[in-house]
Image 1 (cartoon, helix red, strand yellow):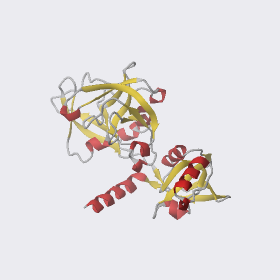
Image 2 (cartoon, helix red, strand yellow):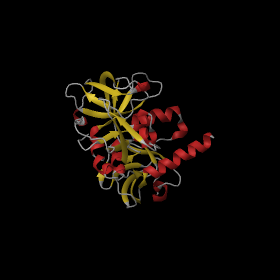
Image 3 (cartoon, one colour):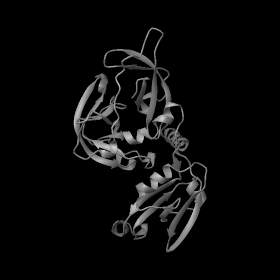
Image 4 (tube, one colour):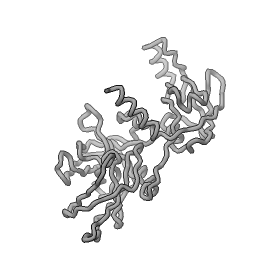
Length: 295
């Protein structure tokens, strides 16, 4: 992404690597070092480390575009190395925007970012490669995953989310992501009524707002007094109208510092103080526990 030899890829591509090598389209091969990674957003920054007999002159530099300007139907191409077939390009369109992690099939990410959806073919080996706007030639996303059992449905991390953290990652600073330990959903009276008809025992309150579906045990939310069926009105003094907006505020919250959350419980407004934890260590713990159960 610049002439100094900094490179973007997915964190999961280099996770656990002892040595990293990169090969350019002109055939030059360099060793690279990991500068920093964010396993929640799934982005890593590498830096080329030339050997004594190598130079990094004339590096091809990619231009990062404004992913906020993307529109559904826009033509894009995905570049990568699927199945070891280097420099493979597939073309498609932007088929969706602002796909939340739960929709994508990565609920662990807790709404940290919205994904770009594309029907450009992405397979194993495409991860970490660019999603390029065909018209401008600018990179608008980093290809990251596919949706299981859904052919022609792939996802990329928007460049604007990457640009928000890349400078920190380049100097070894890992961004934090606030975690409370709740599942939230955007509820409506019609949806609540439908759920209650299917399962009368659910007893979901029939009102509009951001409803807490579940509070995890041993979580900041549990300790702070949040409960199932609380409707979140404000977080840190900011009014929230849907679950995605609430997740964005929580993601940016200061770790360990009390966060004011106003909720509607039954018909009473209550303000609670909750101290967010960093999501990354918590997520690693959850994944380790899952692996133990599988064994």
